[in-house]
Length: 297
Image (cartoon, rainbow, N blue to C red; front, side, top):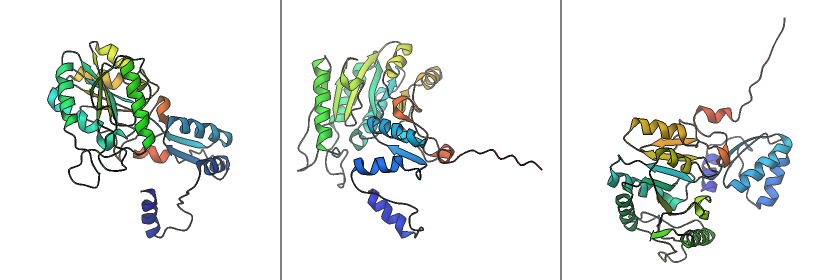
């Protein structure tokens, strides 16, 4: 997809060297770019580990850096919602692109008074998803990007279940299209805090559903990861909306919607989800330098 984008760029006849695409080994390309004094700005979207490495190496030449790294988005579902409607919205958002989206909702905190109804609706909608080739009409969810991702999900699920989590549906790879890295849409209930998946971004079709009673405590639970990219809440209460918006530690907070990005608004995270902003007027400022010029006559 990146190569096709560059074909489009090349078709508009920009001056040679304006935009460049480099292919090769990261171990050879990345150090050269980060150490070069000609490179003044670095923007990176990817894993936390690589982002930290880029930040460290860029510091040697004091380059400006924008980092859009991992996420582990919480969703707080208050007791005053239309459970059936919200459950379907959550399934659609969770399994979009097989959960391989940095702002994908993963940890669903549901008020205990509606937890059973929500889980039943969520699981029913999850089981109804149709897996297949993304190029075919009628497909709801495609494969994962690599076999490595499949194996990592299996390990996270095994660890969570060994610690007491309940597998509601899914849980393993499925043979849908020959050679495809398909993984069944999976729902885990009552996942203990000690489970690896509560701190590690699954980056796949895995939803975690836990109950809550205290509005104050659930915001603390939602913030209890090193990530801070996106967070969501669903409620009809204006007070709960303000409490969630104010309390959730994320660069993007969406209430009653899973819309997390738009060309016109700043996009980015806090904590280990990175720093700097993409999109909106904030984005161009990341590439500019404010200067003060005094001229005395």
